[in-house]
Length: 166
Image (cartoon, rainbow, N blue to C red; front, side, top):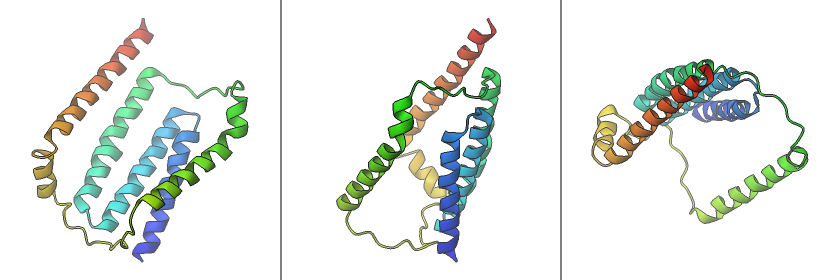
């Protein structure tokens, strides 16, 4: 049953991820991104990381997506207008993408040693205590750097919004 759920939600994540890129309206892309975040939360649940799954839904699926939609509405971003200038990308884009994915898959498959099968629910390091210890000891500098990057992104959105108002 775990394998069937994994396959279903992995397909949902991939389809929603493609939908994020293929949508012309930014709100539709953001809602597709919520679908990706939800399916990733279910995949975390299948691996036995309940805390990570709930953090995924609350932080990314909730707070970050509300911030994205707020910024999209603040910037008044409309639907993307199709461009006919990229004729080479329209003709050769899909074959080149498939060749790139096949080459990347081959390189990863040949470089990695034989991997063991996934045992659903066997990972026990996903508790809030374990994550908190790692986050505030070993990964303190990356945590602080990401905080500063998020602050810079918010300030950039405010500056862009002020330029459009003027």
